[in-house]
Amino acid sequence: MKVFVNRKEITIFTGARVIDAVRAYSAYSAKMLLKGAFTVFDRFGNMTEPDGRLTEGQILIIKKTK
Amino acid sequence: MKRILLPFFLSLSIILISAHPAISQKNKGPVEVIILHVNDMHAKIDNMAKLAYFADSLRKIHPYVYLFAAGDNFTGNPVVDMVDDKGYPMIDLMNQCGFTLSTMGNHEFDLGQEAFNRRQKQADFPFISCNIDASGAVLKQPKPFYILKAGIVKIPVLGIIQLGENGMPDSHPSRLTGVKFTDGIAKAGEYKYLKDKYGMLIALTHLGVEGDEPLAKAMPQFDLIIGGHSHTTITTPMVVNGVKIVQTGSGLKNVGMTTLTVDRKKITDIKYQLIPLASVKSTNASVQAAVDKYNDNQELNRTISRAESDFTGENALGGLMTDAVTNIHGVDISFQNTGGIRIGSIPKGDIKLKDVYRLDPFGNEVIVFKMNVAEIQSLICNAFNRNKDVDLIPSGVKYTILTDQNGLCTAVNLTDTKGNTLDPNKEYTVGVNSYIAASYKFDHRDAGASQYKTTAQTLIEYLIKVKNVAYDGVPRTGVKPEK
Image (cartoon, rainbow over all chains, first blue to last red; front, side, top):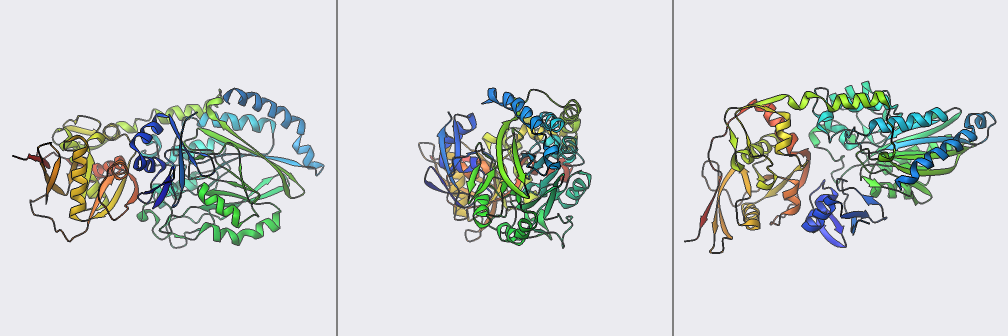
């Protein structure tokens, strides 16, 4: 399936979680996410946990944790 | 935020006491109904006693307090998942907390239909879902909706489960045998009459926010959607088409408190607050005792298999892990990255459950790709080049990497376990963990599919199935530097 991380299209396996898409996007971002230094938001601006399941076309935005 | 929560709770208590909702109801004035809700608890039980305390505290001062779960109560904690009565600790604790209702999530199927039926029977609360047809399955048919009764107020609550691209919930198809699913949004349309009949309608969904949004667009009849599945932490309710959408994250870190004001068969106001359970400083003593008992469970010390020889080093341990994947998932080939092998050895003797979680603590799932030989070689080569060293321990094949003067992989000699060359025209099923699937760069036309089972669960099933294992001492990988 295709999802978008920081506007970049990522093709990822069916059943992937947020962390999988972030890993496919950038190893550094994944490391920072798991450390809590980065946070992932959905297109509505809600925080999404790293283990949340993805749906086709989902948009994720990675930001530094405030 | 934490600092303001308890004062808020206390002030809320005062508001609730002064409101005298029962009296209001007698006078046919507005009635307040409090719905506490969690989603995607995933068997994380450590905050359960705080949740119970919080719910009990509200119940003492308010007659209409209810506790909902928006699915995925199970899977994610061995003290719940790996006991003989899989999942029972969660049901027991949910009963003790006084849960009113749960919707079906995709992980409710992880227990297997028979075991889940037993859990449903043990639960003091119903599981609901409107888009599940279990008439041809072992699964007991869940009711589509639940009528919440708060005195004379009756509020229908409709359950909906998510479906993936294959038209089924995110679970291995083998767990869904005989169960039919229909699109949740389309099916929900058949229940618009509940709004006409009761004047109100709530959805308790396991669709994820990306599913709740179109649901709200399609059905403004909903007053409120309490959601789960996407593990989204909503601090301020989303409002779509006039419908409020809430969700509380995952792992029982938070509880949502949604207060409805009901007046003349209509919900006239909805207030929502996300409450981190870390901010609740007291616990229900009996629930805490039960949590402690489950956490002290000696189940992890249970012997599940026997090692007839020492398994020492990455080749031995990685081979054990990948043999489990090929055996349990029925794939041709599997690979385990050495970085995911977290102990040095399993000594000859009993293998306990906890050994598996020490070996493989990450919770990665098994992902299966259809790949040809060239694609498999690209995976092996790229993995090697990450650190100029063998990284992937295989099952189903053996390989030798040829390297150039810089120590980089130039080619891979790939054979089956007997040394026969693989068919370059054949498509093989290849199982890897989700870390490899997401992080490693390799050629693959197939995007892959999760089997919705972790590599640790896979190894446990394998060890229980084969009863004893032995390391044959035969290396499965090799490196041949360029002369």
